[in-house]
Image 1: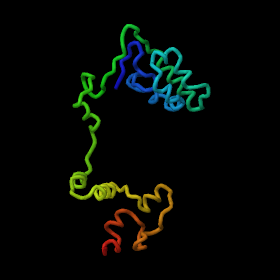
Image 2: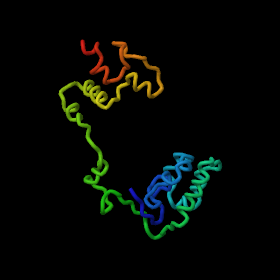
Image 3: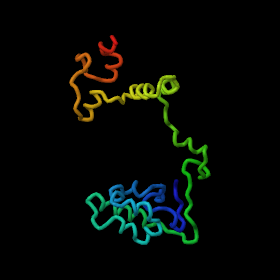
Image 4: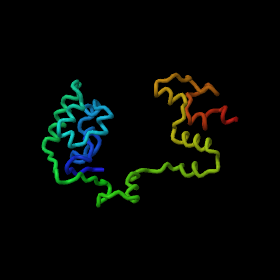
Length: 181
């Protein structure tokens, strides 16, 4: 949602997209991290323009937050509120700015489907087998190669054959012991 500012009473200072379509966290992430969740979800833009946003940040800004403070100050210094108009929330993915069920498809624009997904999930196998097959196809099983990438303890070689490093590809296709089984 993008906010067209009016009086600033409905839109949230820290959460909504109101600075040229951007949120405060997009402009000043270190500064926004200093704001408590209570203030994060309650400070309206009108309250923020009254100086509340400076109090929300707290008195102890870090070295990374100080330049962002001035960048944010500069970004909002030219913005004026219109007391006689209300804030207007627009859905950014449709031309008319109104959310509809058809607009829900915008969330999935550009996504691709895994080639084996329909074969796995439409099979008659039990869900535990489907889930394992899905993890194996996405290389997400916790084998030694994956544990090693994360710096976790792992066996040096395949515990079944002790010939090659353990990976999901090796366990399912290459291991001589699993081929026999």
